[in-house]
Amino acid sequence: MESSVNERAAELEQAKDAFFRAYLENNATVAWMKDAEGRYVYISPNYERRFGVRLEDWLGKTDFELWQRSVAEQFRENDRAVLNRNSVIEAVEEARIVDGSSSWWLSYKFPYQDVAGKRYVGGLAVEITERKRAEQALRDREHEFRLLADNVPAFYSRIDGELRYRFVNKRYEEYFGRPVSDIVGKHVKDLMGEANFQQIEPHLMAALAGRPVSFTFPLTTPHRDVRWMDVHYTPDVDENSRITGILVLVNDMTEQKRVEQALHESQLVLQEKREELQMLTEKLLTAQEEERRGVARDLHDDFSQRLAALVLEVASLERQPPVLPELIPQALQPIREQLEQLSDDIHNLAYKLHPSLLNHAGLQPAIEDHLHHVSERTGLQIILKVRDVPSPLSLGHSICLFRVLQESLQNIVKHADATGAIVRLSGSSNGIGLSVADNGKGFDTSDKSAHRKGLGLISMQERLRLLNGFLRIHSRPAGGTKVCAWIPSSGRP
Image (cartoon, rainbow, N blue to C red; front, side, top):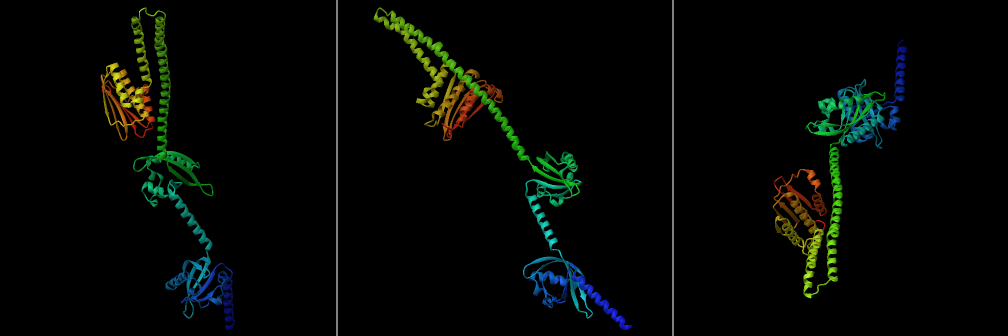
């Protein structure tokens, strides 16, 4: 009876051993056993196959003889933890053998003590290399995405279906002065403020309804200034076509808006200048025609008729000369006087068209001569003050300033009701300037229509602009007028 029980026990033990071997040889785990000193006493057949080793080569050896040192230290540290705690531990371990190949394992290590009291550390491990690589790849992608999101100039975020931030990039942190961790989880209204939220809420609702939305709105910042934001909402849809939130992309368009506004204002100014130029062109053409008609009228109706009359008088003398020689001078005197007057009138007409004194004597003598003629003709008392006029002065500069003087004095005579004027001509190393001031009735310089009416003012400005100069007019009602012209020494001649 006793022998049959022992035989039955032996059979059961053999069955257990066979089951244990079949289990170890036919599953994905690797198994091993080490003594308390870390020497291998067993490795499973799957262990041998996985790492290409043999049990007889490993028996009695430690991890430091079989693995790279960093790996062996990792194994030994976990083995000691099992022995010290006398409990099972779970650990993720890297197995890197001497030839450099590496794999990752989820290990379950446990303590074991035999009937003689000897202690061991056993282990079962399943390979998780692919999972580890996938996790690392995911971490790499997350890092790359965060790096990209944090370094774009735009605001980028994700909002869930309850309008709470689930992701924000660094731009939010910089703009709102709060760490990302403080923003994530907050409701949009709590971050944006009530006034801003009221503007964007309808667009948020539209995006949660499944429609992409783009719009621009003025965002009032925490510092109470206004920034123009270009916003794009894209519904975030899961694999089941359910809308789980909103992807948000926002660009600060404030500078672009300012540039657009400046461009618009420049276009208005340009349009105004074009209109002025068109008006100037029309007036110049009209003035040229008027001047030509005036010269033609003077030549035809005045000079031509007077010359014709002189011809007739000379012809009459030719037909009926004085009987006595002493009467010839008396007969020629009226003809001589008329020729002298005709010569003076032709000289004045030529002077109006272009003062020859500018070419031969220069700007200052031409100004002195012109002031003398204006005072003599109109009775206007004019004082000339000259200081440091550069020499030589180009003809282009001289003609420009002379025309400014002519136009200014003509305006004084026509419109100012002035009794006196002061003309200053002064120069320096930087350029030359001319000013004409009167004591007349003046006008309102803020009235743009007054400037537009005066072809002379526009023509003066254009002449100076071509030489990189400028014209300034200072006047007020009953306070007289002062016209200042300046041409830099670098102005084109």
